[in-house]
Length: 394
Ligand SMILES: Cc1ncc(COP(=O)(O)O)c(C=O)c1O
View 1 (cartoon, rainbow, N blue to C red):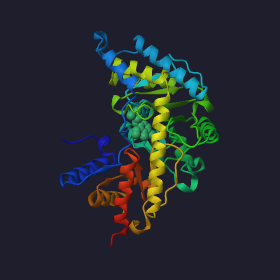
View 2 (view 1 turned 180 degrees about the horizontal axis):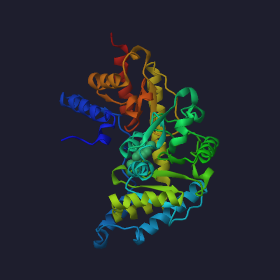
View 3 (view 1 turned 120 degrees about the vertical axis):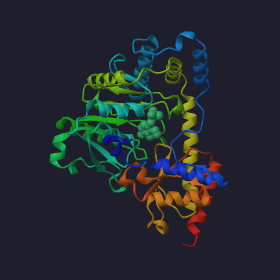
View 4 (view 1 turned 45 degrees about the vertical axis):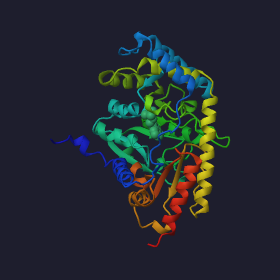
């Protein structure tokens, strides 16, 4: 059976290799500390779970859900109110909000909705993989915008060659950023919006980590700069803020024409969200937000513990202001190894799972990413085990 050419264009999915190594180590009886995937380890808030259970008992909530259903109208309204409260942005719930079965599907489908074979998508590299893989699946042309510590992990728009710019149709941004944990200012978003408007490019910001912020930092929304009239949209998820990753619920906001096209392609491919999940999401977005603050405090503690523990073993990593990731340059002693080789060494020798930088694109080489999805004591333990690797005779 020969796979399609679009399948062949996809890069090797490194997380599958990591999963295999993890399984091998576990089968050997090794205790695994898994800091690989950005998969929240805490449960969703109790009041949100209670709403899910209550609504699942109602017989009318089990059929296919459609956009005309009253629960979706309520959910759109809840999102628009959340936006107003959080970013002071006004959105028309009927046309400028679109619920998604997790933001990942929306990010993949937006490329399918807009890219022809000769259209370019501009994507910072490293990035959350679906930003570039969605482009490849859609058959578009991917143009990487390398980002690095030297430029604050922000793309340099002036580096885009004119012939590429002419064919560019979309640009993906995502700040606070996975995997580097970098943040952006409203000034940067303004610059990006002006650039994209000048060149007729749809601007997309994936704002998955808007709530996971520390030390007084607040993450701006792109729509604070563009409003909803410009060719810009934003993606959000309930996966991180409310620990609802497995529930599959997110949403897109912004320009009504772009969202109409996204809704159109989704209409041919999927149905709406399970109604009890929509009711529960309404509770999450409109209910008390102390659950979010508690979760942020948990991540802040873990960040502080892990950065200090790694510093103690001689591995200095900048303390991020957002996300629950640490983006760590591979220590000098192992700088001859690729990030995949170094990640494999950590799993094989000490049972610590991390994500190799190249899992996020080739410009992630030389780095690994820690996801802080374990208790502080386990993070200390992970650092202690890594010490053995750093002290090992090579
Ligand atoms: C930047 C970014 N966007 C989107 C997602 C996926 O979110 P969802 O669970 O809503 O599909 C993730 C998950 O790790 C992410 O890091």
